[in-house]
Image (tube, rainbow, N blue to C red; front, top):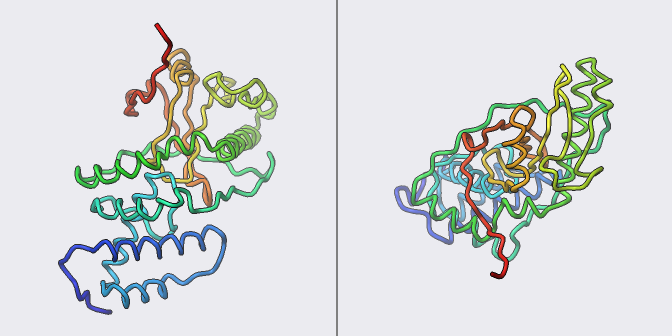
Length: 279
């Protein structure tokens, strides 16, 4: 294994720019189904920037952590390492400058009620521990490339996530031998219009309503999202039925966790806009 010729020194901007560009090259190949060789990519980096294998691998995991928060997909083999330095967030910001969403939007293959995968509900994650300095750098990048707003405005992504949940709910009730309830599920945001405060009316196996608001991202399970006034109101008025479905890692392997009211107990809610009118 090659020695790290600059061991103990901070990564330069040029080194960080090189590893970020190489990471995105691998990510684009992975997302589009192309074959690529991580070892070959790593070897070339080791030759050009003279960092060790371990140092490069850890920096790849740092990049995964930042991308997960930015609502972008990550390379499957590089799990997020949250104790990153602020400089890596800045390097990702430089890379994204000309193109804030460089990875093509890929959606899971459409199936149908009988073949739709059931999205099993996971426990909500805890917020990652990030140093104050790294958080400041990440927040600078996040303000510029606002992941919550990008996901909110991406109607193709939002509709695909709702459709995935709609089909999964049908499959769940059919599997639980409740075809009568499966037939009653309604995709209300499509049938009645958006703005009711939830997207899908589904049911528990005992017939109780589940009012599902679906939030979808290609990023990780800690990617921030927007909550509208209507959604918050329904959560307060119908805490027994309201469920926030957070669908994440949507490009390749959709996963899900749910949040139940009171949402303030599990979410940090920040006012983002004001409704203004002349006095």
